[in-house]
Amino acid sequence: MLQIMNFSRCLARGTVLQRQLTRSVSTTAQNRVPPILNTGSRGSQATGINEIEADEQGISIRPAGIINHRKLPWIWLRDNCRCASCVNQDTQQRDVKTFEIEYPHDPKIKPLDVRQFNNEQRTVVVNWADGHESTYDPGFLTHYLNADSRPDSIPPPSSIEQWMASGPKEEPIVQYEDVMKSDEGVGRLTDLIRKKGFAFVDGTPYEDPEHTKNLLERIAFIRATHYGGFYDFTADLAMADTAYTNIALPAHTDTTYFDDPAGLQAFHMLSHEPDSTSSKSTDLGGESLLVDGFKAASLLREQSPEAYAILKTLRLPWHASGNKGIAITPELTYPVIETRPGDDGQLFRIRWNNDDRGVVPFHSEISTEAWYAAAKKWNSLLEAKEMQYWVKLQPGRTLIFDNWRVMHGRSAFTGKRRICGAYINRNDYISRWKTLNYSPEDVRRMNIGV
Ligand SMILES: C[N+](C)(C)CCCC[C@H](N)C(=O)O
Ligand SMILES: O=C(O)CCC(=O)C(=O)O
Ligand SMILES: [Fe+2]
Image (cartoon, rainbow, N blue to C red; front, side, top):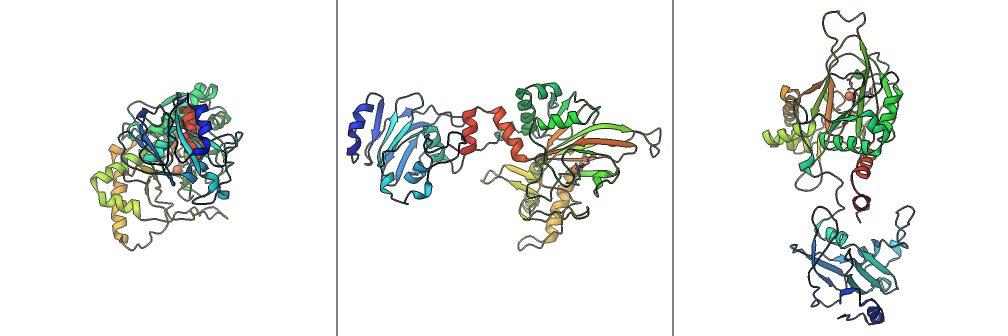
């Protein structure tokens, strides 16, 4: 039986909807909505909705097992209405005139009633005084009752595989033709990178670097920097950077000098031939080093929580200054190790290139010597044999890695060594990974939090 108190005007509406309705609530707290299971596919577990309470401020849904009584304010509900007149159906952008709503009590958005339907989605409907009707997926509502922000578009920590000198359990390989011929191939490639930090694309044609460029553009458009867009380089100091030499490079991440370092980096060794500088007998060198920065940070946290805290806290300047007319530094300073907000402090980004690091600033709580001691511990981890995964890149095998997690380096070399590749923005890569590895519904929720 419909119990609609203080919502006199919609009584007529109530009879029309009655046959579909399982229940509605009034602003008085004593109305309890018997438990129903929320079939919303929010996150990994269905959240049972026990009861909906509505009052002058908003509605609270007491999900099964959750005791918090967070109330979802009316203005928040109206602002997040997803109906065709509140969301531009062509662009998914908000059409709601948020700031025409008088806050906090606008007679226009006074709710006349809140209902839960007995349909598949168990949708919750709010009828507003101005005649507007908003429909909500209970999974969306219960998510925000449990969380302070939109669902993360990150794989659960359990699926992020950290590795050491032997690399991931299974070598992360995707075939070039799979990536070129289908989005399924791109989905597998981006998911391997997301979970293992890097992947190889085997069978990449190497006669013409264009194939490598086309491969990388299957993920997302290439990010241009002062090194150009798609890069194809040898040890000729074409640019004033040690990458364009043949010296050994220790483990580092690239583009530490941008506020937003490149999300992905790729290397495809096109050729490596002896030249007059190479002695016939010894090998030419130029092996590639990969170090899992998340593994290193996890070990540092275990072995020396203080050093970990210091590298997480003290923010540093970084720079790219070698090339004429180029003087790039991030606008903010950044620590070596960054974690996501929240007390589980999931690792978010590693920024490490001791050659491009600026001057360690003096800090009110952290002594400079303490930072150097912590950085020394960090560096010893990166130099430890058991942390170093070495690969000899070959023509045909393109390496693509997460430059926010995996550090790269190389051994010194002789001969003529030619590498091509590119950077790709973090958000463009994550967008591609999301859209190819999650349902449109889940992507929508992750992206707009609804
Ligand atoms: C050749 N390639 C463009 C890939 C790199 C150029 C040098 C990158 C610089 N040392 C850094 O760490 O960001
Ligand atoms: O030559 C290599 O293997 C990599 C050099 C490097 O660190 C880079 O190009 O970013
Ligand atoms: Fe590099």
